[in-house]
Image: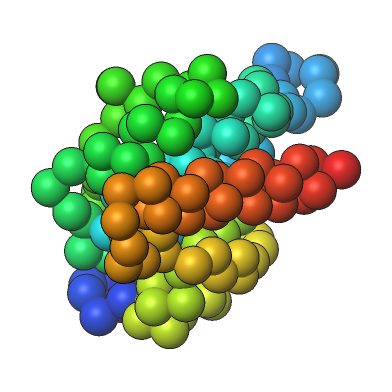
Length: 169
């Protein structure tokens, strides 16, 4: 076991975390799905949207997760609403903390979808190959009447899907 200090907390990293998966004898290495973590502050809107879109568009090529540094109680109702408008059901999803992932999952890519999470948590992780910054405006922080709020959630949703599609090439 190895001690790891990250994002202001101490974690224990299991032995062998950095080993790659190897297939049966005399065969090539098994090609595992690329592990991606979308990280935000509350994991109630942007990171949930990004996780759902990468699952939809990336398929089995990716093992997708999302988490928050200070996860909220529940996914924002307007997040659920605007995602259902594009055929994505978030009913099985809930805000998740970053803590269970640290020291247990070697991510290939961590994508920060908000500036606050990126500034709070260092981009250099020993178990991450690539750290990427995609800061999107927080639709939950937007003030306005109900129609304006829904419009903001839709706009952020559409920007996130566009970014995912660009990233996938």
